[in-house]
Image (cartoon, rainbow over all chains, first blue to last red; front, side, top):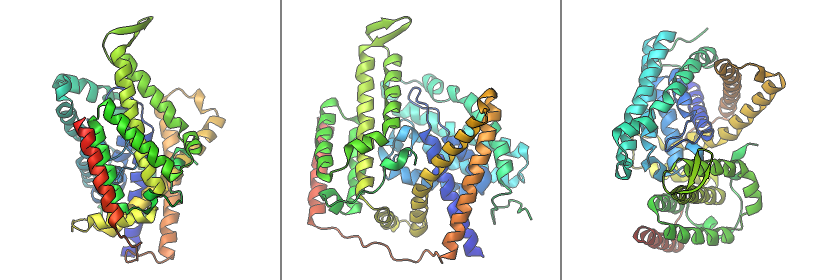
Length: 188
Length: 251
């Protein structure tokens, strides 16, 4: 049964990576950093799969993109994109999903802990993304103040909306999927 | 099927089909890295090379363009957004919105680069079988003991398999909800929730079926992959690509 559960989690993690990719495809291009649904699915990976499998899911997503398949925002892909201005956000997804999974597991899936987890995750994504954006575009007259204005502030309302949606979605989906060994309660 | 149908393997006997997939993966990384900061002249060179390669592979251009039409519309949006947001000397002024010379230059450059990257990805995917990509990824992950190459490769091909499924399911659910007048509800939170839950639930159910099907067919990570081999033409191609990249950087 252990092998069967592993297989199921492998399929689920791939599915969430694919959802993340689909979310990136639905991007609204504004300025250097587009609005994407990517991080909604990253939040969801952490909440549904837990820390370990969530991390695996996001790493596979980044790996597929790094191989040149067009699954990053607005159909871009390749190592070049990871090195580009928005690469920090992609790298930031990795610690973010781990933290979200961890807090959610420790908090026993209570709504308040889920919200705390996602707020921490979102902040982590910006903690990687904004300095990276500043660093890459520093030669083009980008200041830290400006990086915050194009790389963080416009997305905060969207993130609040995404967190507000992720909570009921995770609640509705947890009975459907069962995660062994992640500390989540297994519904009978 | 959804927008990603253009990215699939197409049989053929061109040079690109015959090259070793590991080399092709390397070329993809090299050219996209070099093209990142390319000047217009260098972009011209890449474009000519790509056109030659496309002619050689005999891809059905018209069909692909039709399948990528949503992407082309998106590209137009990027172009317009760049034109309107880049400051510079004004060319045309309509109401409060001004079209600048720098904006047109910047916008067309950004779109050109995007088109080149998409074309590279398209060429790679349409001349390489998924099983070969899988085998190449496994080969690349051999030096990293931390990763289980076989599992990562399986997950990557699963990701590619799920993409069209997700986009199809999302479209189907959106159509069903539109038929039931979901537009009358103005609350975005309500609509997102009522949309996301059934879509994701259904996708998870089909993923569950897939896991059961794999289990029923005795899936295991211990299986034979396609044989990868490199020859003289791969090394020649590598040399040509390195020269091309050097030229792109130096121009």
